[in-house]
Amino acid sequence: MKKDIRGLTLEELQETLSAWGQQSFTGRQIYSWIFGRKVVDFDRMTDLSKGLRSLLGKNFTINGPNLVETQSSSDGTKKFLFKLKDENLIEAVTIPAEKRLTACISSQAGCKFKCAFCASGTLGFRRNLETEEIIGEVFALKNDSGDKDLTHIVFMGTGEPLDNYDNVMKAIRIINSKYGFNIGARRITISTCGIVPGIKRLSQEGLQIELSVSLHAADDKTRNLLMPVNKVYPFKELLAACRHYVEETNRQVTFEYVLIKGVNCGLHDVRNLAKVLRGLNCKVNLIASNPVNESGFVPPNKLEALVFRQGLLKSGINVTLRRERGKDIDAACGQLRLRYEKM
Image 1 (cartoon, one colour):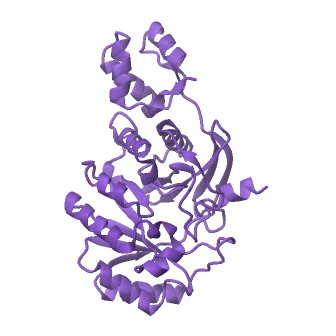
Image 2 (cartoon, rainbow, N blue to C red):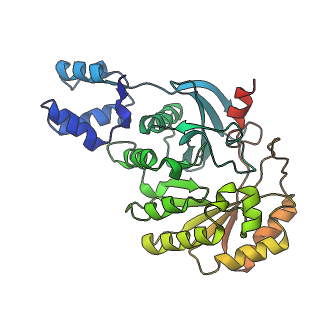
Image 3 (cartoon, rainbow, N blue to C red):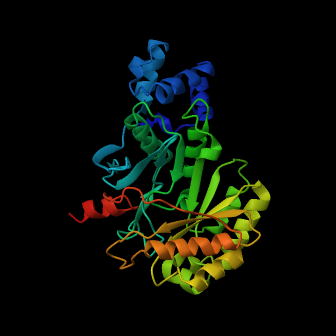
């Protein structure tokens, strides 16, 4: 089976071209056609020789993922359901703002970590996405964006990025390459449920990417309830890894905290969270939980959310309360895929 050429780093492509007797600059030409001009037909790459175009066509493809469904929200958020070659489904989202367009992409088909508030793990884990499949998502979202180009990439879709470490990091290097999508490292975010070895490994990559950690509780009892991964990498171990990451990279860590009524957003929860985060270079992003039927969880009311935020602010913690996006569509991670597969 032909390999999708978009899964090759520029260096890998140049090595292949060198073996074919081509000059290294030809790799940059091909990258420019694909990522700059969004050309997916080798025969249209007119500044390449016919012989090279023929070789490319015989050895590589540029194809997929196949679009199954889109949903558009009144706030401009757009959700995409894609089908892969093996019939697995993945989701991606574009989120517009005044000066940015963020692409939220998946790194796995399904998820094995089964966070209690998330629809992604409901149908179980299927497999890791290959690098070219991750890049294919970005490519599709970029093609859909029209005149407004993608400015930010967040690995917050289906799956755990640090559980598919090598493919995700390779994709990030292609996304970041000035000859690829040319999106700055500080505009690329990896979100993890708390894979401690992956956080430690990421701290040694030498990339200025953003790290976002799904926290959702500041004690083992509550976090065990919400996130089974905490039984493998307990809260104190996770927090130590985050402190190590900050020390190694001099980068701020973002902690995602889904507010769930009656579970993790009481006064004792905010005091506990403020205590454990004090002195750490971090910010907390509060998110009202999505009403996923399978979980039974409900979000707090607006006043409860504001009180929680104010408690963190008074303790000197940098905190934001995320504005809800895509509320009128299946915008939460895994919801559209879950509905489609249950049809």
